Amino acid sequence: MSTFNYLDLQYKLSKKKILRGPSRLFSSRSRQNSGLLPTYQPNADEMKRVFDKFDSNKDGKISQQEYKAVLRAIGKGNLIEEVPQIFRVADLDGDGFIDFKEFMEAQKKEGGIKTKDIQSAFSTFDLNGDGKITAEEVLKVLGSLGERCSLEDCRKMVRAVDRDGDGAVDMDEFMTMMTRTLKSN
Image (tube, rainbow, N blue to C red; front, top):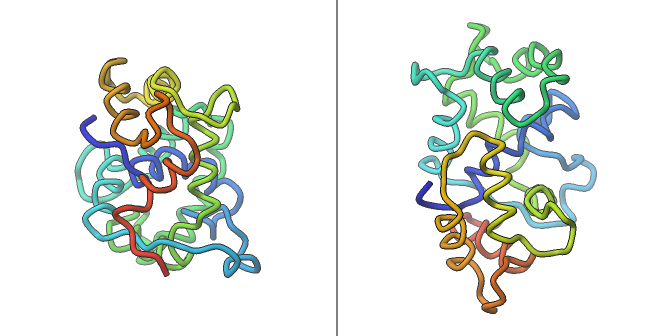
């Protein structure tokens, strides 16, 4: 894994969020509170990278089976029953798949990536809850998601983000990293 950015995490972590309701395919924020914190709009290239991670057979569309495989990979297999409902909302043309256009539309409907989503991603990586993400925590989380990387690769990722030199990523550093390629609304 050569880069460590929010949209790769969005793919991996959004599974938690989508299960709170089909209209929240890529967001955990409620619409009534959506104006309280900034949102960030990902660019199409970044979203394509996320889409490609879902689309494991590279046929240009996400099937329910691919979606379910992602849920299983992140330990959320007990939530697979929600997938048909999610697809009813996101599959705009009714063909049974989510193509890239539909994937982008689902993101746009939610108004972008919310600050709360980034905070949720941080807490997922902060396994011991100490307010810092270490290379070891990155390695464990990525490993559980099927990503192959070495501890040294994870250390390089952390060093690339660690502005204060303490060997870990705090919330401010994480927020900066996650939003540096995104446009604030």
